[in-house]
Image (tube, helix red, strand yellow):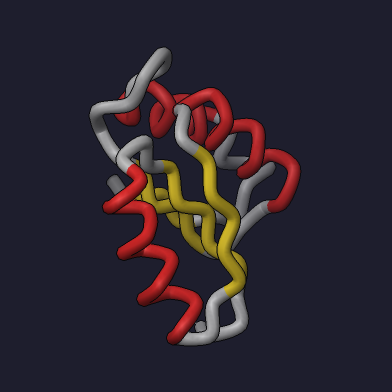
Length: 82
């Protein structure tokens, strides 16, 4: 799966840095966003292989954002991980 695009939805910069360091070092292409709404928008625009979603996010929380992604699963090919 290396080389595939991954979206990370995380509002904590230290956690985001950890994801960034590990995923980029493993060869993944990374898109980062800090809100649930942004994660849903990026997933719609880029159809990543995987979306890693924090639960506690400002605005729309990760559970609601994940529900939105799953409802639109017919158009999306992404795996949604919470």
